[in-house]
Image 1: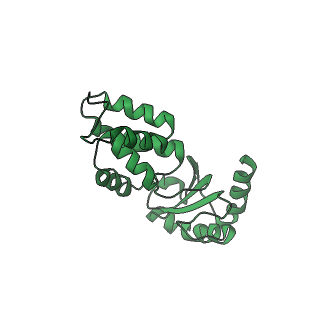
Image 2: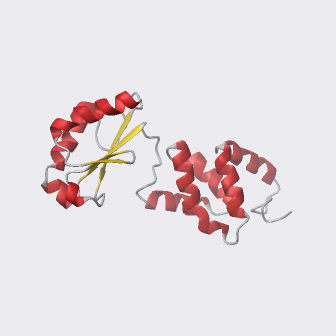
Length: 178
């Protein structure tokens, strides 16, 4: 068999491949196939994980194992990369990911109070998701927009000079979008 048909030497590769493909969206399987056609396919791991998280929203254990099998890299390497980079989430997140920056500039300008207001309004702690799956709350160390402090990022949208009094309006804006 060719390199793209069988990434490892095992008698049950067809079953492993089928199970791995079933664990991933078809678009991700196709992307991994494209990566495997290139020299040094393993160098595409971060790109594969970015696409997977962008499609599914997080990277679970089943997806880690599937990526490892289909890309032909050890599961420990995939897991190590997924846990090392802050961008990747190993747990399902809410429809709206709220990141409150607690970097120095934001902290000095009151970001801790903004975070406390989000926790109060949502009824969750940082690192948690609301029961309805709508919101996830996390802390960021720096979003690189210090001149706009305090900053809150909701999904990919940056909100500048956020005060605790703005939190309810930001949450309502999200609910209106949903």
